[in-house]
Length: 420
Image (cartoon, rainbow, N blue to C red; front, side, top):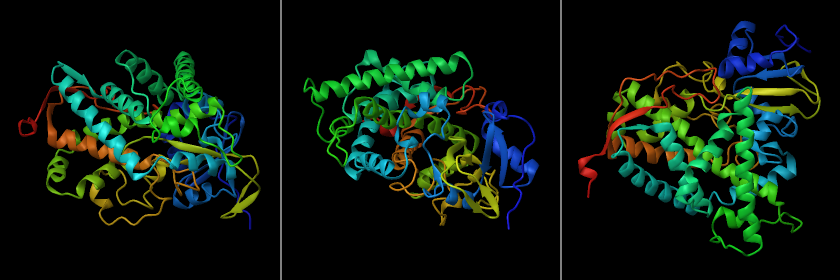
């Protein structure tokens, strides 16, 4: 029996999506009293879903495809043309294989060692500063670490430019007007920089160490033995660099959690296994990606609701991570909830759901977790700092959301026991 899907009245709600941000789907879920509903975005019918069951269906490659789903403004700023996030089926599996090929334990450990070194250098620098704007400083720290890891360490003169360009990719997709177009321009500049590196490698004008992503991707061959075109290769290199820099958002929220829930700091110092629980709760509790998009691959019926081929469908990541059906007291910051957590890859989805290899779960999720752990170790065990009075509020309408002050720290210094 076919059910009538709850429907939001009105001609178009694209502006509401941009204005309401992370709460767009949650607001309508509440008013329509349904985990699934129909709305209109960009003048066309769209379906919005929330929850574990919805995620399971959404990540079924037989039912949904990514090709043609993301709005052009997202492709032109965040993902890049022909990126892995826009592919399906065999093409997606091959590209995901390329990305996952460098996510080995050795390569991740190499990145973590580089990140620790950058933390050490930054801590020396911050201790000489009157105040530290943490969000901006963390973007630079992570940008330097990311470039060194992929195989092309940045000259100091290029750090601010590349940090700006990579930051713009995740800061401007939802922006309206000049800020969005500026973001597109910064992305184009970054792609050009990476394309020149790849071209130089293929022409043997420069040689990157063999285990580095720049070398691996520059000479990666598809199943027919062909190299990826330079434009696509640069997009996938940026798909490594950009998300590493975006971890700055999570680290800002980490400091906010340590400030707002001061009892957490003692638990992190006392219990060895508490760090992982804390990281997962930061990723669940605070806003990061609001939702992801796909299109219905072919007509099907689910829970009595009809899905028509080609229909744009949004899955609410933030809402699923705050779903009271999945999480007890979802709006409470409570890391202990992860002590015995046995959830599925469709219930905790801050960076996408499903399987790493076959699905669209973020290939770099483990990198995010590990870099957050390193950062917590520094923030809790290796440095002292003051958090002066400032505007620590964050807006659920802004995508991405970060505290208004970008977290200002004062009197940053190493803990005495960590000074050699």
